[in-house]
Image 1: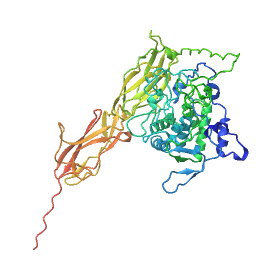
Image 2 (image 1 turned 90 degrees about the vertical axis):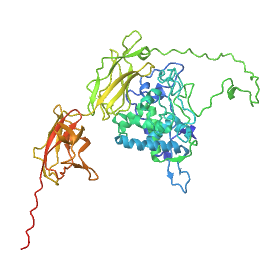
Image 3 (image 1 turned 30 degrees about the horizontal axis):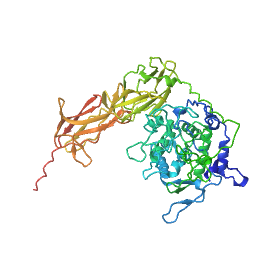
Image 4 (image 1 turned 180 degrees about the vertical axis):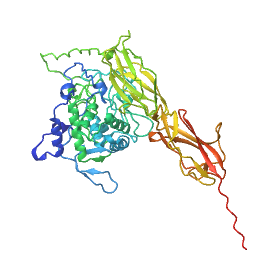
Length: 572
């Protein structure tokens, strides 16, 4: 049944809303700058293929399944007892249980981390079907890892894009060229920064459907895209595989799955058959069984098999078999000539938490002789335990080198986590050593503190202060919010030891506390301390507040003696 998807004929009343959407999508005009799969990536012999955008996509613009959804929309029906949910739609509406669970969990995770993206799990299902036939019909183990690796064709420029090895074969087993990997078909260079741990096992494995689905969701939700917006949805899908035909195929399955799906047991999903690389002479289709080396295909064996080793007599022919034209080597690209990366004058990278870094990272691509190379993609990736990002909220940015061979990364914005992290520059599509840049985030700080009121702070012994102490922190004259502070009731101006008598704070249990640590200024640099109380000791006391950055303020507190009570008059 699956083999007929791409060749169905639309017939009057049989056309459903899903088919209408699919047909409309497939007749849509091409977006500017988009390569149509049918015209741009199918091989027409042995000519090399050059796709400059491939290494900047999720899949390297690798081949995909072209089957379209059936015309009848799926209509799920409720289950009875504890059986597997069923539906009235065709087999194509069934999604393997573990794969479906991975899509829904990815949707939930992105709903929390990027709620403005509005990622529907049906979009992941549509891409998963087009990329790998839902992990080859759900052939995954209990943890969601594919039983056998799913690899796309070798991206050697022969009918496909040419992407030289970027991972040393760690993901795809190929140390010469890259290949798309796993149920969502990520190329290694993209997985390196977009990979996620979706099943909580501490690993980021492109062959695991939970990891791959979450990574695909994060990839589709970058750049602040809102997938409920049609334009952003198109941009996101095209960034996954830059082809109008791919876009239309994914949109068709998206609408189909939105009509309803049902769960099927793992390993029983329907496998697609039509491929965008069907004319290439080689295919990575998981439904095809290659002929073992040294054997003859069934079509040319002796009828009946029987294990005979004698070849069948061939009829005479006067027409010699066509010769295979020699393969034309792919012309070298600027990327091929890059030997190493050099720093292009990047200054020290330091910023206060929450602020933008004043300096930007600049990297130069050079040949072995030290000559600058222009028009090379350089990827900047933030690594390490940090919440710092590039302006725009992304942890990865790809920049093309200018005529001087220099790529300048977007500005960095410091997160709240202090300490050091690394920004690594690498050449996209070229296995050369990366260049690391150290960046440091310092804590928010204040250099001045002042009370917001000049009201005297007084209290009667055994009572409580009417006014709470409120301060404003500033740094270089500007309000300093988020600055950590400590308040201590000290013994004397020259003795910062906590006092053991006089005014005090109360903790959550009502116990006496004379040091408050972990305070933090709020909006506009304001800090309001908890209410102060006085014990039965009268006198003048000091409250000292210190902040990160060295700001200090000492506040005077006065406690007056409680009035003595007059004796009661005696009876006459």
